[in-house]
Image (cartoon, rainbow, N blue to C red; front, side, top):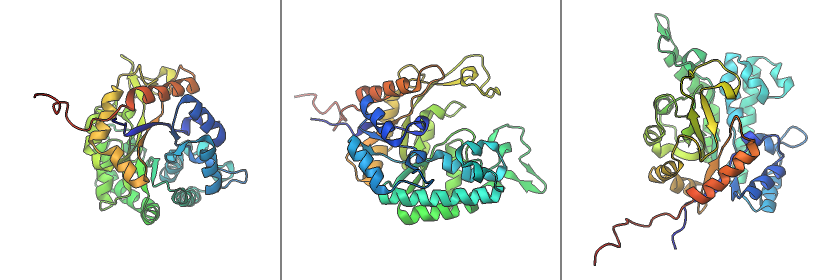
Length: 344
């Protein structure tokens, strides 16, 4: 009997108010087979990390697979600190936030290196994350009248050089440990579209640790999800399953801090604009499940639910998403063409 190449899983970043044990209990009850906790869920009471043994025991007790460690916030701090942006403060200790920008960057680099060591000890070889504003806020706006290059400056070239320099030690350590750093191509990050990501790969001489965490819900400014992820297909090692809608008549770049007032709205999985079944099928076509299973040594690859809404209760919305993935996207995979059984 045909089996699925997928299993339902869930991302822990949005559920950070829960302890690791509570998060796993919630995910298990909702029907997930695995989970991807945030790096913060792995902290101990002393400000360090739980031991690999403690983390393994928590997953064994919940009878769940460890599908990765969501590390977006840590990497955001590291590659954004140089700009002086206050957006890094929610993700670092208050005493660290008082330090100089160079000291914050050094602290976050050390934090990431220690986190990668923990990942390696746990056998986690794929780390979902995103690089911060390596090119500066001017370029992150995407504004076409940017004056990004003048007689004595070139923000694009400077950004590439900065990215190579700032991420070098982290990339080298990941390479040594056999870990792939799966950047979530995302507005306002170090790579906001497929071409941006490939530019980073080129700047880093094709560094194999530069991978992609596919998330179709961030494809709402001209590049559709299939175009994006087919361009970077061989580097897709991780994924999110997430949906969205665009409200008509509301500017996408409206300065609005409340999610309910924004043009782009994340939604529950069934009611958004994206065809999630087609997305799951495309991931098979570009080799994501086979790639994940080979690197992680598993029989199935996770479809990581990140369903969230400005209106629906988060736990309810995410639980609904887990059920949707389990029932709709973890389909038995075809072993050949439907034409094989036709004829005499």
